[in-house]
Image (tube, rainbow, N blue to C red; front, side):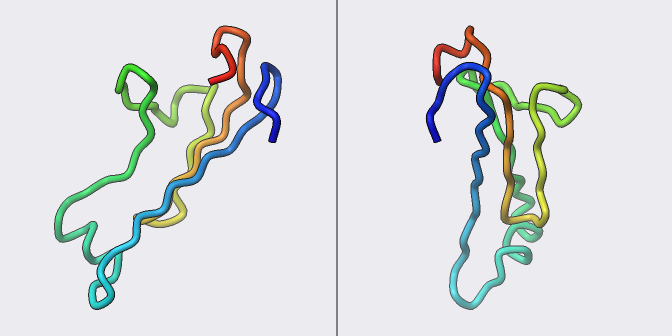
Length: 74
């Protein structure tokens, strides 16, 4: 995908766990949570209309956004 203002981009992150422990069980037992942050380290919220965040399970999360000029192609 060409990264430029006005284009939509989707990022996906998946957590893998040890062979004998399912990822879902590991996340629950360790009370871990996957989430996206901006460059300043601030958690992106699902309520922010600029970002579409989905987490179909505990171990995978996707972020879709349309880039703006002020994003400077990042």
